[in-house]
Image 1 (cartoon, helix red, strand yellow):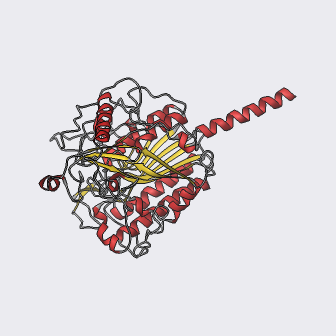
Image 2 (cartoon, helix red, strand yellow):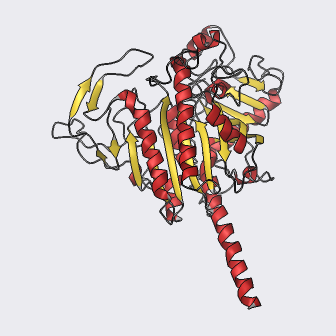
Amino acid sequence: MKKNLLAIAALLICTSLFAQNTPNIIYILADDLGYGDLSSLNKNSKIKTIHLDQLAAAGMVFTDAHTSSSVCTPSRYSILTGRYNWRTSLQDGVLWSYDPPLIAKERVTVASLLKKNGYHTAVIGKWHLGLGWQKDATGNVDLMKTILDGPTSHGFDYFYGITASLDIPPYVYIENNKVTATAIDSIAASPGPAFWREGPIGNDFKHAEVLPHLTQKAVDYIGEQQKGKKPFFLYFALPSPHTPILPTADYIGKTGTTPYGDFVLMTDAVVGQLVQAVEKAGLTQNTLIIFTSDNGAAPAANLEQLKQKGHLANYIFRGNKADIYEGGHRVPFIAKWPAMIRAGAVSEATISLTDFMATAAALTNQKLAANEGEDSFSLLPLFKGAKGYRRKYTILHSISGNFSIRHANWKLALSYGSGGWSAPDENKAKQLNMPAVQLYNLSADISENNNLKAKYPSMVEKMTKELNRIIDQGRSTPGLKVNNDVTVDYKKYL
């Protein structure tokens, strides 16, 4: 009898440990949301993000989290592969409407890794990593043909979403590998702030309905997983608050700021709906919810008008989306997992969104190969409040392809100016004879106004050497050297 009780106790302990090491995972990625848009991160925020604040209070807030790039396609690539985008052919900018897929077919993704380890995997929302569109006999893309290289070719069991940003055609819903529309029409361009470009549109597609529609799909998916025996991974890639800025009638004017502010408030409510769906399904305790953004807030948010209203979308950081400055890539990052993460925890560690891959591998006790998750470090030690997070250097990238490297409080940027859209851009900075190298100590100069390049040449040399090493060896993590997809020259933009 005693042996039986001991066996049962051991089984219960093992079952509990297994559950805690295989949580359901919901990764919510906002589009162009600034660090300062959250009232839990910005005490002077004019937007009261109550649902995100509650998520932060119940989990861990990371105050020094960074996207790998200050624009969306490269950031999304890095999230799903654990690899810097500039190791691929995407050296600057983003993918466009019918560009080929950026993720190579043989590359392991977070989704394929988790699927191999028993997870059901789904992506709902904005993809923007290229799709294998087929063409007709005349060489034009045929939207009604089966997509050959979408998310379901990269580890996702299910996909429902849109091709790219909501202002980039074609405007269609895709379920798995097929467009849901029964007919394709065209739509004229729309001016800002509800901006979109002209292009083809499906007969079941209305821009203003996209965010609510995708949210309902995500809520339904969570409810369905309650019945399943597998843990699940949901990558919910919001189309908001990116343009077109389309708050629904019940949010218009609610913040007293701008349409962007109202759209952020609506985005906050969407997060609340997902959290509520998890609670309703009885999955709260062992579900890891991560919330972040693909880059900083964009000029399209009318940042100056927001500032006049007393709201700093990118908080106290210099620059905005597209820039090498902090405002381009320092983003909100919240992780809630009651079974593991202490409520109200704060981490000041410098982390990268590339770290999701190694975190997923650690959760499933998988060892990544040398050519998998090359720039990823597990966040699990930080979740546990323990030592062991191994990132020492973080590389950042601007829309124009300018590089920056971060080590502790030091930041080296190989750029004459912002490397992006804010002043001074590269051409203007060159005309002003500004130096091609910028070195900042962020602990003393978070606004990046005091270039210390001349004062600390040894630090410039050290960090440049590390940048070159990480580029050359094909990976950030220790191990065998692997190949980049292309030759990477960090000096070519100087």
